[in-house]
Length: 363
Image (cartoon, rainbow, N blue to C red; front, top):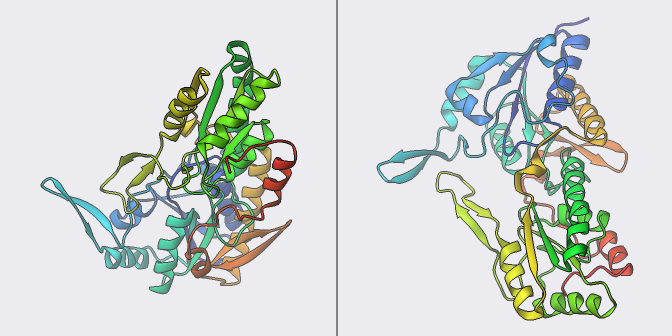
């Protein structure tokens, strides 16, 4: 067994089920097969800037396969190239990339494994261009990363959302109400689409298909005429009406991406109730979709991604992310991943299949 030196792992952006399974996979394979030292970076890129690390031994990553969250912590505001700081009542952004690069060099790692979504991997790509050997692992419940068919965390989020929507059917039916369920996804509709279809949602509204409120209300009234005196509406947080805007929940000034979506469910509910005369209730699943244990699918996927990442380190395939294409794993340039989010395409087969069974998309 040949010693291959030291590697580091960080987890950035929002947490989701399956992160610990990747950490476990990377660390165990690196230790068992290549006798590597493994270092965990605390709180994402914040730990790079503040030199906050811890050694990860075999026992540290045993028993975390089913554990939600991340044992390393995370941050979705600590961008070394745009690091927020307070000056009086103002938030200023400073370029601390040289600090980060120096700290990485001092750590003496052969590779930095970055587990994250588009924001985390965009930063990873910039660090790679600045000379840091990096491998990316795709993580996001939103499933909106370029270069991969699926991300770990997505299946778990869809499962949680589907279970929540399923549970609302009985109360909707009992009280003859319209029940609106708002799910996450930012500006991509993957969670709403999959959870909506899986739960038999009558109306599914996604960012990629701006909705006409008259069409939505028309669906509600049509169901009532057919004796279906309740309607389940699944809406993505980034959905918006035709010629309208997204609903912003709040603005976080210290974040490089300050806009936080949320509230479309309540705005939509008020309109539906006013136009249809039918009592409407809204449920926002929120961070429940990020919580809990990963599904078996995500545990397996996370394990495969972690093992592939170590193989890429050994082969010095730096500057790439592990991607999923069909049933195979491939290598995707980080510069491709950094080009922007992967939204639901207009020709997505599941949209047409959902239309075929009567699902309304509000268009």
